[in-house]
Image: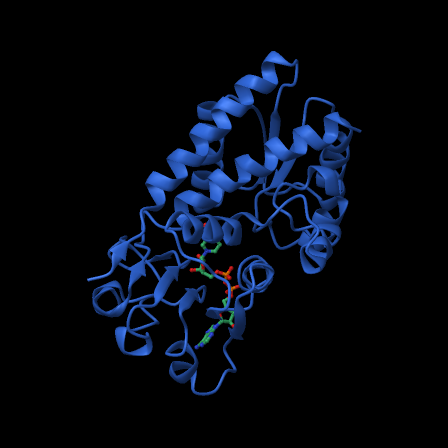
Length: 283
Ligand code: NAD
């Protein structure tokens, strides 16, 4: 049986470090503020936003919540973003996705000031990640890197296979692993002979969005398996993209769902927000 990578424990450790840093910054007169904007009443988004507010409280940030009705126009949302860009009490801005269909997500993301874009979705920040000179790291891939580091795994020279090529997980994950000298393969819905590729991985990251998609027989003996997937089954239970039962028998280390990558995402958001406060202060 492989080592279970405990995302809850690592996340708690990161948040405690942030709490102490926030305390020190307060002594220097620097308050940290995170604005979270939510449009509409999508239940999953409501839960995410509530969790972010709770995390702000835990680490000592000021949190500013903007809950806007589903009928909010793109122009109205842009005005809120513009106000937050100029607000000195706000260091980080997060617009919870997905947005209602009548609002163009790209337009909104592009309107967030890059130095307050703690989700790292703005093209300026995406470009910075590409060239390896970045301030903010996308939260979920950053959480994966933290779990790998905390588990004592050295990425350098390892075969890293990512299943999924989304802009928020797969692609930035590939860049972060590459920056640590991994040999990276990105697989996606059009990849042929997927199991052949995944079986080659020393580090396998699954970000597909299909429950139990990666089975034990697709994994190399002793591999590190990171499951980014969060899927809700009909019985309301959460499950990952990796079939845990068969995978844990083969893997050297594996993240569970829940309790793996999930708790790391918010911890990394908090980390980016501290960075934003320090960057904005020095300007
Ligand atoms: P997405 O739908 O944007 O991307 C899914 C990717 O999987 C695509 O690139 C697609 O090419 C690939 N794919 C689909 N079918 C495939 C197949 N048969 N074979 C190989 N590849 C295939 O999803 P996303 O936003 O990247 O999210 C992926 C999963 O991670 C979801 O379950 C999501 O809920 C979860 N997620 C978790 C967190 C977290 O905080 N832990 C954050 C973001 C996303």
